[in-house]
Image: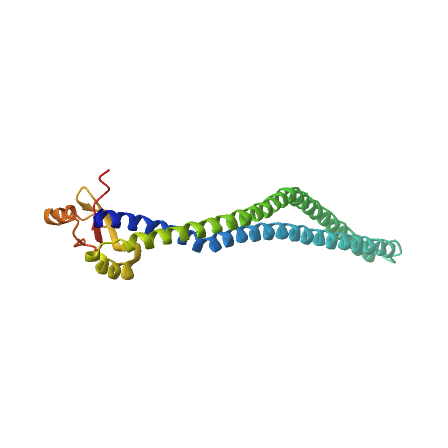
Length: 235
């Protein structure tokens, strides 16, 4: 009949496997949330780009309205200038007209800059939209794959726990009580293998007596970390 070391090795392996599966199941919502956050960021990037274009067009329109207003004012001042009764009034109106034309030129230059910005921003929209659409496809696929993975993880964990119960039931009576107490406190961390006469968990070298006790299949705990020790599979 196999000694305690064989049972402990198998128990530790199954417990670590079951914990790994539980961790994958637990982390699944966070992984999905990360995918959803990425999708939200891409949507926000596209919306911000569209808003920036809208705002730029509003600025362009405002400047175009200002130009039309100045043009109306120029016509009014030109008429007043042509009807001026003296040179002083004529020169003052002429100066105003000159300034208004300069303002129009400035606004036209600003509109050209804005139009260039709109063109550049508009050119980037297809790429942003493509990234967003791809992210939507990816998250649909991810959710479908995740659902399948979670079902598999849950089934595998159930099988692992069933196998664990069977192995634990065969654990020799002389260490079963100690084992149960340690597992209640530390779970799968209650055990550790020994390699090259060293505890794998804390890298502390065990004594010759402890090693001999393990060979005799006795209950041995690491003096440094307190874990139940077992030797590696001799095969």
